[in-house]
Length: 519
Image (cartoon, rainbow, N blue to C red):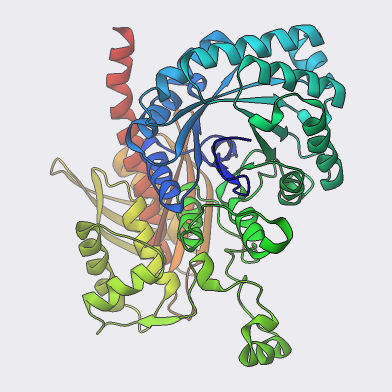
C-alpha cells in the first residue's frame, strides 16, 4: 500500500450518503453542511457527501459540501454508468481533494435478479466505470456491491479488473449484513493473496448491521489488512444501520495493542458530533449505546461504585473525557456568569461563534430563571438548538392551554410573521398538544399531517426540560422538528413551528430552482 502510514486506518464517513438513507434521517442542504463541518473537525479522512445522480437536491448538497468543506477528501457515489459518473464529477470537481466512488453488484443473486447480467458483462461494465472515473479523477474507489455473497473466485476476478483499470481504493462491502468475522477475514485474506498489485491500493471495508456484527466484521477486516473503514455517526443507515464510527474508532484506540493500528480521529469530538447528528436526524441515541449513550459511563451497582471509588479502571476501560464526556452533572445556575457558561460549553465539546454564544447565553439566563439547577443535558440541548435551528418567518408570541379530566383540551396561540402580520387562533383537541398544533394549522393554513410525536427528558429532576421530536407530512414530503422546554406543550409547539418554517423555506427555495432548470 502506498500513500499513507501502513499502520494508519483511514476513516471514511458515509453519514451523509448511506446514513441519510435510513428511514426518517434525511437532511436539508444546510444540515448536511453542518454535519460535514463537524466531521472535518472530528478528523475523518473521507466524507462521502452523497449520491449526486439521485436527485437535483442531492447534487446541490454534495456540490456545496465539496465547495465549502476543506480538510477531508470529499467523495461522491455513482453507479458504473456514464450519466452517474458525469453527474458525480460535476458535483465534486470543486473539492480540494475529490474522490469518485463507483459501484456495481457482483453476487449471483444480484446478477440474476437485479442486473440480469452475465459475469463477463459485469467485469466489462466495472472496468468501463473505473476508467471513466479515472479520466476525471486520480482518486477512484470501486465497490463490488454484495461482495460478501459473491463467489470468492469471481470476486477476485472483478477486483483484479478494477485494479488494472486504475482503481486506487477497493472497498469490499457486506451490503446486507450477512457475513461473520471469520468469513470476512478469509475474504480479505483471499483477495490479498490472489489479486496482483493489491499491495499498491487501499483495501476498504463497509459493513451493515443486520445481524449486529458490523463493528466486529470491520475489525476482522482490519486484522486481515483493510486500511479504510466505512462507517456512520451513531451507526445510522439503511435497515439496521452501518458500522458505528464512534465504536470502531474507540475499539481500535482502546485495544491498540491487539490491532496494532491507529486512526486520525480527535476522539474528544465524538460525543458532540454524535449528539449533533442525533439532533438533526431525530434519531435519539439509546441510553445503553456503546461509547456515547447516557449509561456508557454510569455505574449504579454498589459493587461497581465501590470499585470506581477505589480506581476507575476497575469498571471503565475508557475515560469519559476521551470521547468528549465529562464527569460533571450539576453545572450552572441563575447567578452563573458568561465566562463560566462559555467554559462549560467548551468542556462539553462545542465551539460557538461570538454571535451564537451571545444568543446561547441569553437563552441560558432565561432558562435559569425557570430552573433551579441546570445539568449538562440542559446545556447541550440549548447549544444544539442554536446550532441546528432553522429560523423562519413564524414566531410564537403567546400560548394558552386549558385541560381538564373528561373534557376536550383548548388552546389559543398567537403567532407573528416576519412581514408584520399577527395571527391568533383557538382550537380544541383530545389533549393540550393536539389542541395547540391544530390551532397553528388553522392559523397558518398549511395542509400538514402529524405522523410522529415523541417526548423525552434531556436532564434530571422534577423541573427537567423535555425534548419534543415530531415528524410532519406535507405535499408528499416528510419534515422533522425538535425543541426543548420545561413546558412540554410549549416544546411541541416550537418544534411544530420549526417544521412550518422549514416547509415555507423549502417552498421558497424550490421556486427559483424550477425556473433555473427550465432555462
